[in-house]
Length: 101
Image (cartoon, rainbow, N blue to C red):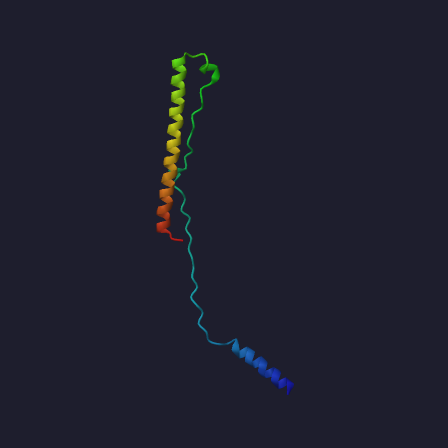
């Protein structure tokens, strides 16, 4: 009697594993690496301040001209770096539209 109950239980378990169920379709995600354009990855150079050995002996107007040129070069470098960052942000936004997450 005990063997019959065990056999029926085992048969039920075996047959339950053979049920006909549909396997859901597997979703496959494809990722694509899109690098940042190399034109935007150029490092911004900064101007070096005037050398004190050559700067201090100059006349007042010449020192002022060198200081102004230094400030102008630094401002140009900063603006260039900020422009590149803006372009990278715009590029990233375009990539998000093309490749939604």
